[in-house]
Structure formats: structure tokens, C-alpha cells
Image (cartoon, rainbow, N blue to C red; front, side):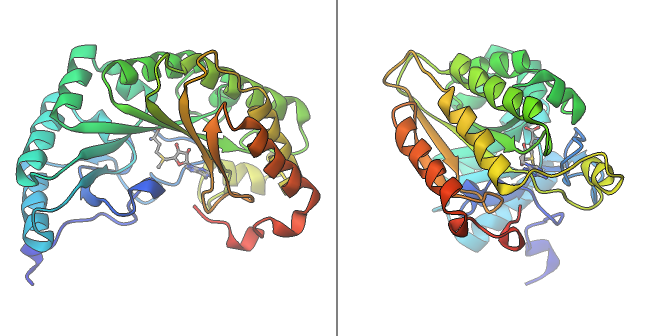
Length: 307
Ligand SMILES: C[S@@+](CC[C@H](N)C(=O)[O-])C[C@H]1O[C@@H](n2cnc3c(N)ncnc32)[C@H](O)[C@@H]1O
């Protein structure tokens, strides 16, 4: 096969674990934000690719995989930053190219969502953009500032409501251990403010939405890595991580008893795989955390953890 018939990828690519079976299409490269813990910008200069180049990749994908593709994920770190008109054209093009396509997904920074009007988000949703993965990381503003997230708890509340109003499924991630070890006060605030954020965005209906906790990995080259080397940042141990997660779960309380919030903490970075529906299965999740706290031999060893 000639180079022209290969789909272009700028490696390493960034996609959510749940998009492992999706057709990956490189719409942007890297991320337009630079958070202190993230490695998506270490080896890449951020760019939005040309419309025709992305269309060509969709055509090549059709030749390679046929027309049965059901899910597409537009790479990389925050493809929702793409101007709406271009994103709309590509979403429509993808839907026309693959008639059985059920959804297109993107990573989105809260600010990318807030910059789009309700009408623009509605148009994208109706065209086929059905899920946005948003890195909340924490609901604690001081911590968000400290890791250069460029977003606040209030931004997340507004961005989540906008997504839900446009019928785009929200999948939000938090980072366990983001505030570092040996500091109970920061850890408690991180857990409680994050739970309060989740409580506040809970929709009134029974739609499905996702909340996940990853556990901090300190990738070489990142700002947080530099702080660790300088002795300014200490990583949490397994027990601190589980206590932080336990505090988060304990403080989840939804008024809507039909809420369908799928909670997951079963990523390769996590010590203990957890899954359940919030807040209905809170007790079950807490029991598994307590089991992990008292049977540390079941926890994933550090050398098996990864992003
Ligand atoms: C590739 S990033 C894209 C995030 C998106 N740009 C945003 O701002 O929402 C995806 C998610 O991976 C998680 N992540 C990134 N670096 C991480 C790290 N070093 N340790 C744990 N989780 C990390 C964060 O939750 C982050 O939001």
C-alpha cells in the first residue's frame, strides 16, 4: 500500500480507553492547553489539521475498513477547539462516509465548550458529535490553579450543563492524588469539592453520563515531574489514594434518585478497579474501597500502573 493510502497519525496519539475500538482520526495534534501533569504537548506542536487532509483520511479509512464503522474519535487532546464550521463539515462528512456511524467523540477542555454557543453545540450534536470527554481533574479551585488547568469549578458546572442541554454525553475525569501526598487538608478539599461538583451537575433526568477517576502518574518531562525531582511534590501512597477516593464517594449525594451516573475507576493508572452507578451503588463501591484498604495485596503494584 502506498503512503497516500495510509491514515495519518502523529504519534503518540491521545484517546480515552473507552474509544479503543473506534476509528481514530487525527483532527488536531497535541492539545492547545498545557497542564502541569499532562504529556500530550511534550512531543507535539499543537495544530488543527487541514479540512482536506482529514477528509482524505476518512476516505482511506473507508477503503481499509469498509462502511461498517460505528464509532469515530477525533484525536487528539482537545479536538473540540476546532472552529465549529470546520468541525461541523467534518462531522457531516464522516456521517455520510460511514452510513452506520452511531457517534463521534472528542476530548474537550471546559473552555472549548464554553466558547461555543448553545446553537453551535446543538448543531454539532445533531450532526453526530455525541460524546465529549472533559478533564475536570478536581473541583477544588486552588488545586486547579496550581496545576495550570485554566478552568474553575464554575466553568465545569456551566460547561456540563451546556453539553447536557445539547444532548452531548458528558464523560468527565478526575485525578486521584493530584494534590500530592502527606497533605490531608488538600486531599480532603480535592475529594469534597470534586464530589460537590458532581452533585451540582447531576441532571434531572435518567440519561447516562460518566464520571471516572484516574490516579496520578508523574510523566517525565512534565512540570509536575520537575517539582517531584526538586522535592516540591510528593506522590501519594496507595492508602492515601484510597482514602481520598473514599471521601469523594462518601460525599456524593444526588437529589435525583433515577440518576444514571456511571462511575469508573478501573483505568490502568488505578490501584483498585471500581465500577458502579452513582449514587445508587455508593455502599457497594465503599465496601470495595474498604476491602482494598485492609487487603493491600490486591492492589495493582506501581510497576504495572500506566497511562
Ligand atoms: C489527554 S487529556 C485531555 C484533556 C482535555 N484536554 C481537557 O482539558 O479536558 C485526558 C485526561 O487524561 C488524564 N491525565 C492526563 N495526564 C495524566 C496524568 N499524568 N496522570 C493521571 N491522569 C492524567 C486527565 O484526566 C486528562 O483530562
